[in-house]
Image 1 (spheres, rainbow, N blue to C red):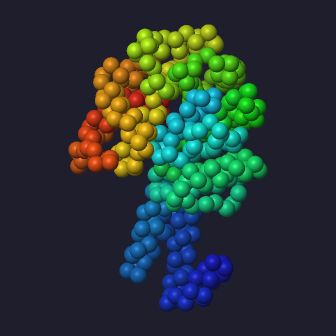
Image 2 (cartoon, rainbow, N blue to C red):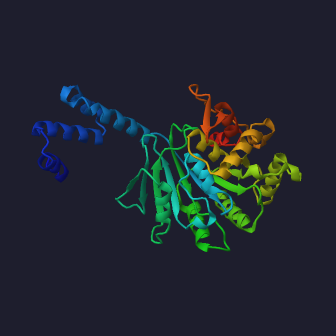
Length: 363
């Protein structure tokens, strides 16, 4: 009761509240903070405190969520692998800039919080944080430009198409490119060594397998996991939509060449997913009612037709079959963008064929 915040509310805000009622509210809050939900619930029977039910229910739900199992995923890859696009597709919104020049040596951690409506940012473990409602990409870009900031944590929801029930944390490392910035590689290697994580998501560029930068990173990951057998690694071959069948390329050949390449680098039985994070992002933008650029609109129209075909189902070209299917809403049959209608069921088929649901096999 003698806390400055409490005194400020009672005295300076001129609230019509008795000290005894204020004491009850303070005791109610302290009971929640200590996890004594029975004691906290005893205050809810009083009519004047009826609205505290909202705080009681929300706090108890969040506490139970935080006590649940947490899975942590380290995302690594070269600068051309499309890590930012992949992370955006997991979140369901474009919050990370995908341009190569936007990369920094910072480590970004994204924490799934289903009860958070917007985004909460914290950097370098400071006590202060920002609650961001608009222009999250602008805020991240601003932090990117601060040379003294080394680590940024973001809390928010993940994509509703993945429906994560448990605690999920994604740790995004800088895209390595030894010829451009050695600090990116150093930060990534340090994360592989020292971060706490359960699984490595190793992103590869479907159009650039076998670059020197990728071999260097693969070598280090191989060396590290040999000493940590409990750290499974999932190879995600991103940008599979860029395979050109008219140039005698095929998804089956991409899978086989990836297996051969990984075997040459010491990975005998790799777990491989073919993915188009870009297609996933486009589909989610349309489903969310977000506007598309002219270029995005043209590309979406192409993918809407082309990737609805069974032959373009990327989940068929993975080392494990996809065990998940999209949950299609029953209350809506179509969605419009620029006054052009699109069938909801077909969009979800394209989403499934993009390989996005395959990720849940390993989560």
